Length: 494
Image (cartoon, rainbow, N blue to C red; front, side, top):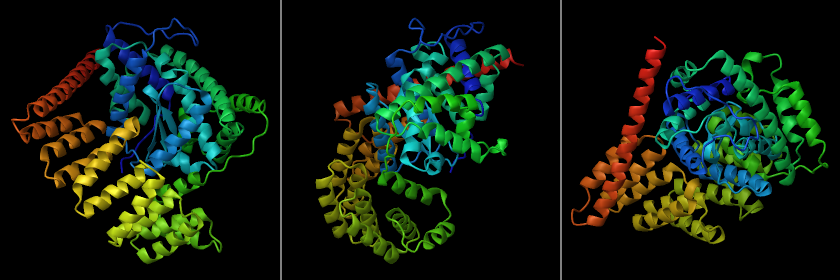
């Protein structure tokens, strides 16, 4: 697992990025002029540039951090995000993703990409608390705070800006220090003041979003207060969320006053929230410690039974896992997560036809369900029916769009190779590497795909060659600009 160190002063580092982009787009002596909040005449990123910057940002994040590839966790966090967006009436597409990091933190990137740390999900005591943080991050995007923080970059600089922005947000020290070297004390203070306004605005907009979505807006100040109080005597161990989103008494008071303007709301309870927390415990928890805790419950809840089953499955204790799984299915026979759990057990038991039948029935109930579809793909591959697996995967990739996980392409490569289609397999691996930010590896895979392509298939050869040229140009452009900036920084700061 990669260790991710989140920046202590996000506002300072965003200014560093602003100056970096400004220097790249203009000259070494160009200055940064930050717009006033709400100034419609401010020069900021266009919608198209924001979209492309966001896509490049996401690839850079994947290359530097460990993103949770679980389809059920990915589906849950996006469903929660779009529940909030539905009430906010936003037209911009968003993508929510989970970073496998125990730090309590979340962040918003360009293009509507919002990252939530696993530590934050586990720290929340209800879905409403998690929704409060997600609503706050949505507000950072909807109010275009990142776009306001730096001048408009030229089209050719988007890849560079994305790489620097990702490094700053997730804390790549080498790139961060180079960016900081370009800033001045006066500009840092200016950006700090500007970002405090951003935080207050994100609180205000987020509270309104929570209320409209049916959550209690009081959960936002309550969650931040609880985090702050839990570490009040340990300033060096503050949750990263409080470092990157500084919470002052006046800010808590202001958000509390705003929340009190809304009528009381009965807290929304979601079984899926607690089931997802149970899944995350198997990522971060210690098996023996967790099982000891779970064994102390004389009448375990559904969530506790589910976590016990996950731990037993992870430990290959299939008999115990199945007993717990069957008990869960009796409670909720149509619950997708319970169906998936039982199917995983059957796959481990090698009862493949039984698993196939269960999944076929489930997919009639939940068409295009990502988790169940992937389990069906695995089952088809193990039954030596690779062509069916390819069809399922291509449909899933098309249907998921911006919500697809890179691992879908990795699995597609496996299925195509099993089909004997080597060129298609290498092409799928190229897309996998590109999505995780390893563009050079993607280029290598496309070269192999071209080499494995029938020379008589001119249409396919031209299509692969066009994609190869596109990625080669991207690599050359990014490496050239990064080298130029390193050279400029070395000459400016001997």
